[in-house]
Length: 312
Image (cartoon, rainbow, N blue to C red; front, side):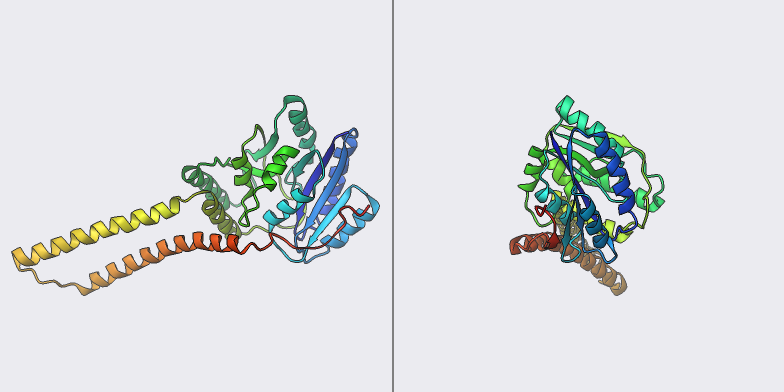
């Protein structure tokens, strides 16, 4: 009997968890030949998420929970779940049912019967999302695939089914600044992609604002590409050449035509432009330095307040 671990990050998901539990029970009843554990990671929720998880854990031994001391973010929750999972196969899912549980048997079959190491999912559309968010999401994937050597699949979800070997490889990457979609691509392995239409949340509201997604995108770019640093160098080089040429032009105009040097408003504009570009380039360098700073400090990726793992 093979054991399947299902990792479910949850932040303020009190409304969605009962629906998720109902649907996931159908899956393990359908796959009765396999043993299951469902590990919920309570990521510092402010609602009744933890209380609900404790109630389910009392009634059902398959339900495990890990509760963080505060909100550490979804990446930390995924990493904690992977570390605690004891299954032969591991899958990651959202609690809001945007990741269809009915795909699990098919994903399992691809690994067991067709010898894939990992089965990943992607959305074929972004129906139901705000148009602006969808536009920037598509542009982000195009941009990062041009900047990074690690391929990022447009519409990829965190929902994936993996062998123990794949999970162990991910756990070897102990970096503090994590972008799981990039890490899964980085480690390689034979991957089967399954596409499905975008699913609406079964309950509750999304915790990802446009600003949060923008910051997350910047994290991904700085985690898997050094191209921004190259761009800042090229910008600096271009402006040095332009400045040198302008100096020569001004000297020649003054020497040959006796043209007096004037036009302080345009000079001020140029100073502001160049200063802004310098600050922009310094900001790019600062982002990479900040990542290095956080890695060097070796702070824990998460802190567990309580859990019921191994307490049966």
